[in-house]
Length: 218
Image 1 (spheres, rainbow, N blue to C red):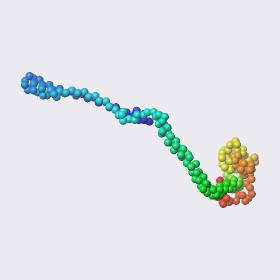
Image 2 (cartoon, rainbow, N blue to C red; image 1 turned 45 degrees about the horizontal axis):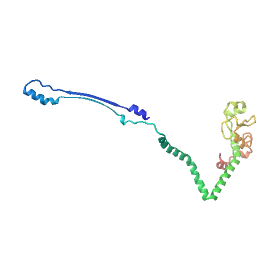
Image 3 (cartoon, rainbow, N blue to C red; image 1 turned 90 degrees about the vertical axis):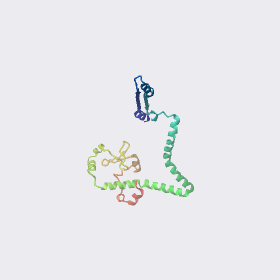
Image 4 (cartoon, one colour; image 1 turned 180 degrees about the vertical axis):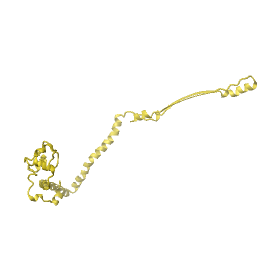
């Protein structure tokens, strides 16, 4: 960048001037000789040639040494490291609080652990309810065509019935010919190896439960 500025901002000035003055007084009289002696001092001659440029005002780029690179890049690297480590430093607050209040920390850990257990235990139940509510709605034109001609599924981009991840060769497909619902490996394992669309569960699972969904919604 500095080289481009230096190349396109360089301006050179060249000034040339020439001055010649000559007064000639002819004659041999006393007045002529007097004028030649006094006016002759005005006879001057000068030649001026001046060349200048703004080179001294332009930046002079030079390659940086290794010490200069280290001195300029090291503070930036330290700042980036601090930004990345900021999230881990926030965890020190929990460690400090746990050191001074161990009983409170134990209660918090038990609460979070039990909450995760309840969420995992209610995962299948909640997904059954969601799929049952979806099955109660009247299917659209696309679903009607798929139910009538199942072979159309191979040309459609499908996703996991539970989490919605795009279908891959590792996905499991319901063996029922009338269903064919795809599941990713994790959702299939969490569902216990059973299709939630074919077996939506008892009638009670299809009822809304706003309290449970609000507390443990995925």
